[in-house]
Image 1 (cartoon, rainbow, N blue to C red):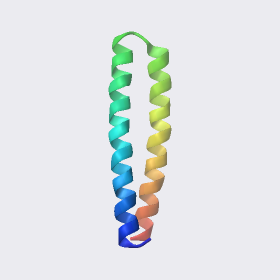
Image 2 (image 1 turned 120 degrees about the vertical axis):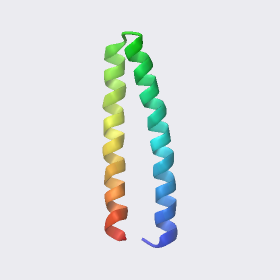
Image 3 (image 1 turned 90 degrees about the vertical axis):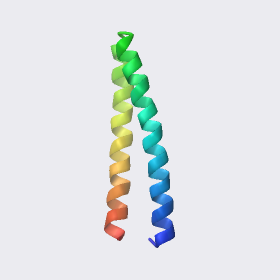
Length: 64
């Protein structure tokens, strides 16, 4: 991975994290509305996405 690829990947990761922050806000709203099943599903999806992001970060780290 060259520098430009790394910067592009980091930019995509930042966008993904911003999206996840919005998803967390949605989960908070669902919990406030006592929609715990929907909130649980939402949080499970967020966990999967965070694990994918962690994998991408590891890939970037290993190429530095």
